Length: 167
Image 1 (tube, one colour):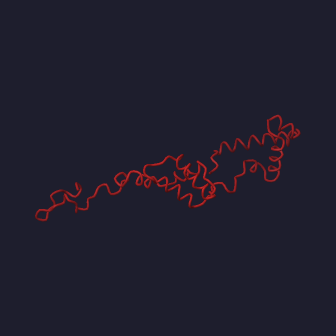
Image 2: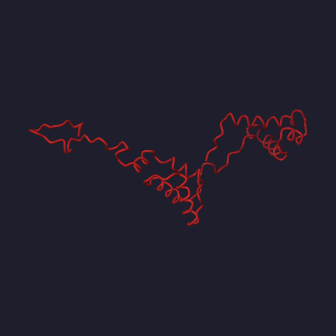
């Protein structure tokens, strides 16, 4: 999963933390009082101060987890979820999540969260889902054949009786 906070939210977060530290650094208010006045725990304010002294205001934002955006479950489980999403009749994401979780536990794998299952299903090509659920006639391919060899293309003296676009 990705970090979905907007840049404005991150800037506001850094500004709030910097305001707490400015009272301590510029106004010489003890860090414990500056933290208490703003409703921040002293230990948190100390951590912010350490980050600020190490790298300046850029380090006051939340650090990004190194494993963010990666999945740590078996490839077979991902393929199972994708396969369930392509079944006919279509299954809900909740049903896929429950069934995949039961299989994962049975095989000793780490179970996927509902959000991960939803992301896997959403990453499938919509045309593939339509083809799997509704067949070829709804997928947009092969619905109009105009190659001139259909049953309506009987010829009389070398001329077709119907135009190719009708067949």
